[in-house]
Image 1 (spheres, rainbow, N blue to C red):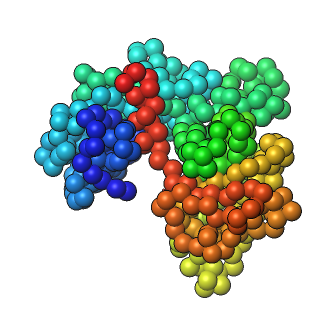
Image 2: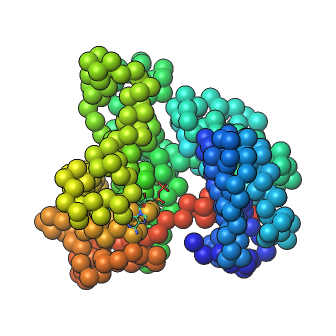
Length: 404
Ligand code: ADP
């Protein structure tokens, strides 16, 4: 990540508050640069850790961080002590990432008491995330009361999914009462990347039929027609869809009944199994793809199978979304694995030549920190790598809301 002195006179503080961590970034929305960034981790443990990156230097501290209020106080203290000075950085808004906006939010929204209450009401749909997001919002408002706070929802970009894509074929009255439908996630990244693609290719967004593959620890695919999301792989929660670092992605729901009835596992144990002990980690023992490739090279059968299952699922989704879109112009890889892992990019799209999808091995090679075309010249489908930047997207959406 690049850090620099502000190129414009305003900045936005972006806060991503998790259950035991707070990530933050002070963004110059004009240049897109991160002026400073950091993370507070292990909130609530005996000893927490703080990392603050500013002026090209990294400061690390190990201190007790009992709660989110102390975490954000620590962050503001580091800005005071090490810089940059928040007053001179002219923070015009605080942008908060919120995971679940349910069917209530289709775009970024100014925080009001009513909005806070709605985020709370949506907590049953994201019990680990929304309460932590809300705590971060409340603490940040108390500490920075003079700037507007804006929430940006991970689900908002997918409010446009057609009913045919968003609906589970589950008894309608039960689904309606309990808000069981497909909401998607990672929407800020899918929206940002699909808009970037149009700029990079210098083509109108309205004309493009795109597939975006966001492959990080969590992974999701989306189909975007003319800038509008029409399909995505995550559902009620981020568990559905692609194979991920520790999540299974798609399984027959009957796996849950089977494990409950026959293995005596509780619902909480199965939740933990499918969200934290499955995916690539569950098959290979490692969730990081660098370690996974090392194991494959050593001949580890579980790692080979994990990679094959991961690539097979990706290829299957690409084919399905090609069918959903009817015509396909662009496939874009983004996030930690999408930007850095040439083996995954090549493997995921191999065998799809009949669909006009090809990757040029030489162009694909290596990590990509800049937008890069990796398909051959003249290919029917352009394959791209585009680095995502959720913080910048949140900062710019926050500015849109406050009209700056
Ligand atoms: P998230 O934001 O979901 O936590 P990221 O988008 O940061 O995740 O992606 C993290 C993942 O990216 C790591 O777990 C690792 O598997 C993968 N990754 C990062 N760097 C590389 C690399 N050089 N080669 C292969 N995979 C990488």
